Amino acid sequence: MFGFSPDEWTAILLSLRVATVGTLVGLPIALVAAYALARWRFPGKVLLDGILHLPLVLPPVVTGYFLLLTFGRQGFIGKQLYETLGFTFSFRWTGAALACGVMGFPLMLRAIRLSFEAIDRRLETAASTLGANSWWTFALVTMPLALPGVLVGVILCFAKALGEFGATITFVSNIPGETETIPSAIYTYTQVPGGEFQAFRLACVSIVIAMVALILSEVLNRRIQKRIAVFE
Amino acid sequence: MTSERTALSVSVFQKRNGFTLDVAFESESPLTALFGPSGSGKTSVLNMIAGVLRPDRGLIALSGQVLTDTSKRIFVPPHRRRVGYVFQDAQLFPHLTVAQNIKFGQWFRRHEQSALPVDTVIDVLGIENILKRRPATLSGGERHRVALARALLSSPQILLMDEPLAGLDDARRQETMGLIERVRDEFAVPIVFVTHNVDEVRRLASRVARIVDGRVTAIGTPTEVLGR
Image (tube, rainbow over all chains, first blue to last red; front, side, top):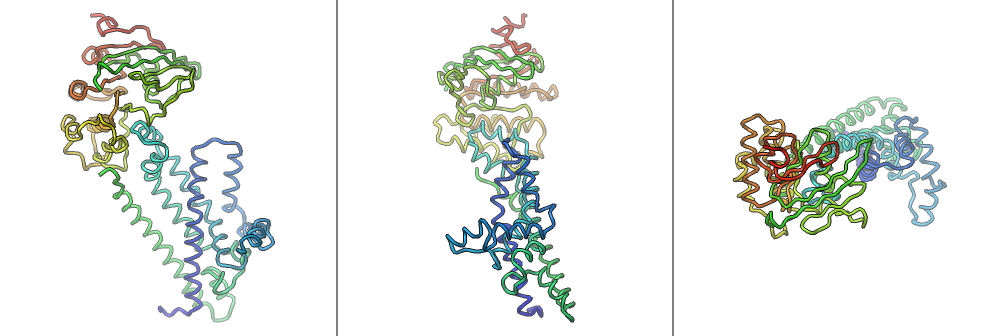
């Protein structure tokens, strides 16, 4: 289809899977962390903020290296996971998803946190005087108002995950069919004679996927804004 | 839930940034005014009755039910208080339509016996034509009426209004005062409202507490407190 080779298709589908899983698994963590950073006061908040944003400023290779130290087969968490559950991230697409998710996480966190901070808290107070406990207030007031920012965060994370290269290749290498995502495949094609056309084609695919994701988020956002209607 | 039976008892103390609030009053009046200059602590008292602000020390009781008693560590959270609060700047939910806004509180208190009929509230407040609109498209007066409807429909035992007439032109003020009187008379929900306007107190209130610099300096009927 579209003249893509099976290898190219594999890289495209793997990229989509890795970016989607990395983003969706990171989303609930980002929501909790963003809410905590935006609303709560606790000791070590500045440190936590710094650590969560580290992947944004560190060289991706360094992040990949730390992932290897932590979640690799011999890593202090990775080893436990393998010995107790038989699960490993090493040289698996799940490892690529982890690396992509970690790299995109700070962008998602930042967008969600800003949207929580932008909400007028007096609206939440109003909800509480109308009988909503804190969970209902979060579900019916805070979350819907933060939703545009959450969507922006998800799209940013997805786009970053889609283009992630350094941390992924360091952590789980570049194995066709398992960890070779679009950026890794482009890199591979640029390294072999006559691979320029495939590299260009995959680069175009990246652009198309990113554009579709952006447009989709805009459409979703508009729909959600129209749809919130619990009390009718 | 008639106004005669609803007795409000407030005795609160709070010290913040050099300002001391030390207010005590009781009222069984259908319309009590907290009257005083800006910054005297009137809104803080409303917030404490609603439970969105905790006093350092104090006791707040409504119809015999203790809402706050710091000596016994009792603090009923705002969502369990059945206190309708009309905020000064309405605080309508911007992502919901007017209809959804006014049904917000009603939905949470849908099992209450004393629920007011939605259609009557909509009719009295004259908001039937704007039910499908979003708060951003409403005028200041409309927003206020929606906020009042929303608070009324949450089955409140008491209605708190923070400067309900501030920022309205004279015609709107007269209209809104009429509305508040209708709400008081037709729905029999006692009202406590905050104001710094003498005319509003004289026209609306049957009991008034004058608050100056965080203290009640006089309490009684408008004539007793303000003179003739």
